[in-house]
Length: 126
Image (tube, rainbow, N blue to C red; front, side, top):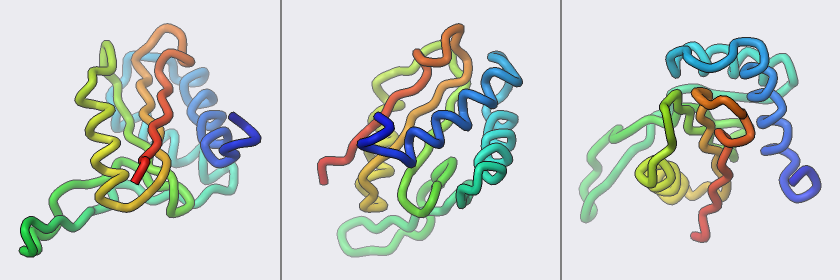
């Protein structure tokens, strides 16, 4: 993955550092704050709780939802701290990618025994 998507690779490294330091079992908000700090330490630009404007049949509905994290204005990160990822979590991230016209997202679940099981990369086929 490193050669094909260096940004995802860097973010996953930051997330692994957070997981190795904090471990599983905390609330999502704690991981979000720690991951933001870790990414900033690694020179990445990150914005949290990014509002997304929505429209429906030509009518602007305003801010309909918020992205957990947007890294380098291109990679969406959806954070979870749940027992297991469900299909709806993937669909949620894919919808965010489509609404923002972004290509790549990471679904990261910190509530796992093996952190590799908690990272899923999602690609928007446009």
